Amino acid sequence: MNKIRSRFDWMTRDAWLIVSARGLRSLAQGSLSVIMAIYLYLVGFSTMQIGLFLSAGIGGAAAYSLAIVFFGDRLGRRRLLIGFTLLPALTALILTLTTSFSILSLLAFIGCFSVAGGGSASGPAQPLEQASLASRVVSERRTDLYALYGVVRTSGIAIGALSAGLPVFYQHMFVMQEIVSLRVVFVTSAVLFVLAGFCYALVSSDVEVEVAKGQWSNPLRLPSRRIIFTLSGLFSLDHFAGGLVVESLVSLWFYSKFGVELQSIGIIFLGSNILGAISLFIAAKLANRIGLINTMVFTHIPASLLLIAIPFLPTAWLAAIFWLARGFCSRMDVPTRESYTMAIVEPEERVAMAGLNTTTRSVTGTISPSLATILWSMGAVSLPFIVCGVLKIGYDLSLYFMFRNIHPPEENNAEL
Image (cartoon, rainbow, N blue to C red):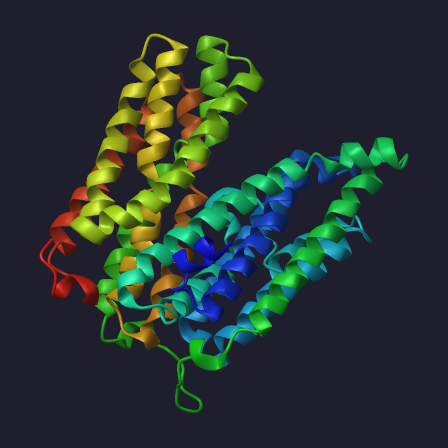
């Protein structure tokens, strides 16, 4: 225990609280993302209604993310973080009380109930967390902190997804009806959200940025506006490309092309996620040696090349190896991207940077999966893999040539 403490002695109390809160939110979101569609189906929602409900939650999260670009620091980061955990907690509880489609869809939007899975599940709290974390650690440890933050986030979602099997246990152990057992998960998730809100309430005022009374942030007038909008555009392209090859479609590809059984597909994805989580810490160490931008680009391009090659591989085991290798390389840009974007702007611009990135990524991320399904239905099964890889390589090269000379503070005095 003492060794663990000494290894993380650079972590401040506020950083631990924010990371812990993120873990609690991820647990709640992970379990809800698995059972949500099933629950809505069981209470009588049509497939279209389920899709609209999930989209309403994503839309609400995107709207809040855009709002905090303008008013985040004016309203206060801690206050908003607490609110963005209590709102989904309330929504989860109300889900157990009514099955009205109109009421629940409206509530999903107002309560930013973003539980569709993937990046869309991050919600408006994430940009506030990113901006707050950047001020609670020294520059040399910032990327390490975002790596730990990413591991906790990923692990929380994975454990939450596994815990979604608890309703079956409740049904057998306590002789519950299936609907009732699913509602227990909603209540448990609400408790996790409330606990996360309690962690945010304990965060010190040091995470706040002082703004003049009545002042709001206009991203069009920020000193770093060109950098903020350029990066947001590039990241939205990356997210759009990633949405062309979501895990559910890759699962279908393994199943339809090679006849891989579902349990084997699950093992492949589990291995990919584990390797991705391990790579986050490696990315932090690598960035300390070669720089944030270099780490983002030089690990991402190999991942894209592996992805382009996958549809041309002749056997399932070879495709699985390439997918696992791609999973290891593809996430190294996550902590480095978060660290870089928070480092190259002023503290009062961080919420705007993170909020705009989240908003643009949420918007573009809702389009590409539909486009991918159209391509698949036309018989162009390999095309989503190829287009995704090509777009991501284009994004990486653009990022490198546009920002290779813009360094964070800890790199300015270092030879990389």
